[in-house]
Image (cartoon, rainbow, N blue to C red; front, side, top):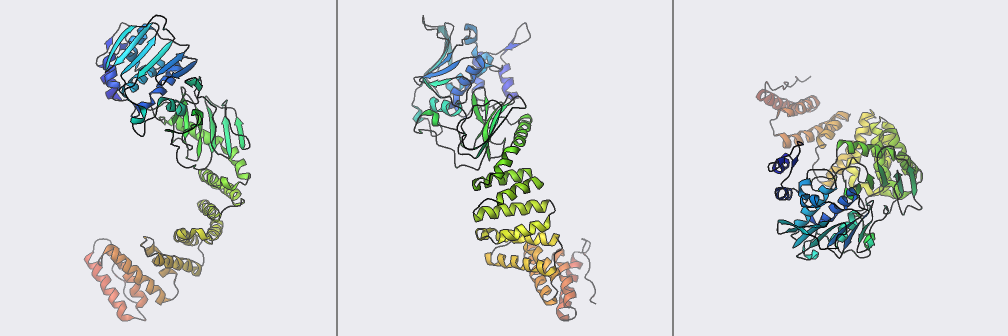
Length: 515
């Protein structure tokens, strides 16, 4: 940004009031390098300009002409339009829209108002008088060299761009006389929260909450699971008003244009936000997620509480996914309470198992180890979770360890885990820890020795045959074999002594004398 400002200012000149103006040709040249990578979005800048300048409508006619209803600008403003690029306001948006349109290499662009016409052609700018009787407010017209269908897969004609992103504009936006404006209409959803005065359509028969806006914003929040992939808008059939942004989008409306704000709220919350805190980024294709905007997003999530509580009590199986995400967001006893309500629904085995696992996780975090063990054991009997059984059995063994469960119960769980690992035929970094715990829990010296031998082999593969970390295992083996297998005990002791001697001074302890 500093580079951009320096480039724009270097050919400015000071006036008596201490302000500076920009050289129009230099401004066009520099700003063109910093504009959106999607120049086909240029009509949205004209929507913003119309809203900010106070136009009562914006008409797109014959695929080339934008008519700003009820607004005009002066001859001086037209001739110095690119001098407003660093100012806030509608003239800046108008100038940016012209620059974006120039990237499409049109044969000619004209900006006309107050009896003056500005012509942009092949990188050059000229000013001329309008034809008598042609003063119809403010008009922008483009003469394109090529068809939109040849511009590439991501390119969209202006009418579809307007229908997709300007449908919620506060002023009428029309394409060849057809209005594209419409109320916000949630896609398939179970519940909806409307904050402030927002016209929402298609919410009959769902859980609907309305509340006054506690701040300078308005919003529609629609919690729900992921709904497939974004639609393909290019060449979509049907009237323009049937087009919609991605059904998982959360949008911020800024001066009539809806910008995606993907990271502002969790993916399971869709909707629309109108706030003066939102500003588009330099690419003019998304919202800048400032700290103030993130704080507002957290406030919005808090306001979802009563709606989500009612949704959990409705016992709708299709709401299980979004309720699990909301429970994870709340955490603690509140999250567990929501998940208990989800369990009351008629769930598929997979959904029930996922809910039980999440309850067990949250109960473990809250120190409710007995309840966590119970729910985890219930999840383990669910057939669809065979692929996750290895991790679930390990988690169960960890809960038993934290609860100081009987040694036999812990040993049986760890042995089941090792058996599953062997059956899967893969390596797992937790295997050494499991063998070490089994050696400690085994009452039979022979079994303990077998686990320690396996542990020694695993650690030798990972660390090499002479690593100092092998000595504790060798020392324990020497002690276990001292009475029943004295030759093996001496062999382990001698090897431990050799490793200790080699690594003396590195913190290793010499092997203990046999009893």
